[in-house]
Figure 1 (tube, one colour):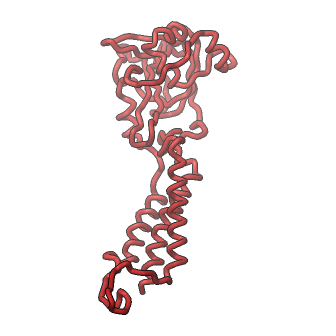
Figure 2 (figure 1 turned 90 degrees about the vertical axis):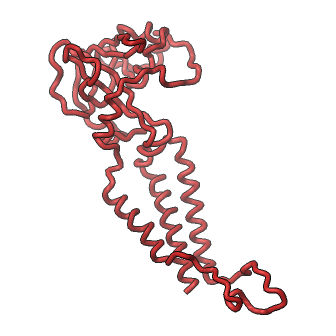
Figure 3 (figure 1 turned 90 degrees about the horizontal axis):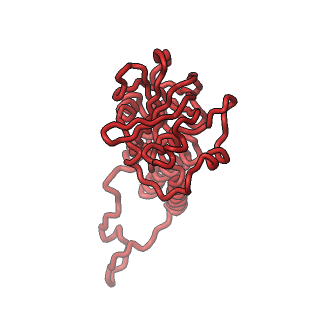
Length: 274
């Protein structure tokens, strides 16, 4: 019976290791952890697998229990030493297996629309983020490092545009430029006096999905806002500008063209991102 218990408990560890290795090789992991932390998932999975396999192979071997029996002969069983587990191994197996099965079967591997709305409706200042010193930024640097769309728009992601706000050097270069970016679209919940604004956003992780923050940018239309679904992915081009309110600098794009696009490769429809 002890051998069976050991092997069943080893299977529990084996399942945990297999789950970690499954996520390591799957693109879903990008939605939960930043890439620099993926190696720890691999190490943990391999360690669990090695321990489980070793335990299964040695389950039938008896070793020294480590107790001093004095001059008496006999093993631990003869001295009524209890080395058993407090938990039935099959119960432990079910505690691990059932949640694992239902989680893999039913989870959408994404951040809910309600959570995205709660994150993306907040106004955020680029000053709230800290970065290491960056090299000098000039229009020449931008020209050399950035591709352009067929109509001449600089193709920049929303993070690059957002973090120019509040940096006087970058603002001077970017302000008035024709740029293109891709992001998710929602209504503008805060600074929208004339009702002709919407908001772009993407979610950004520092280490894992639990600390995700929405990086937003207001876009302004000359006329009515387009009839595009909430949280749809869009490609937008327009003229960059900035507005200041209560000591905070907000980037804003004055839209020249906008189109709905499929979910970009590597992005999850529910908002998880690399």
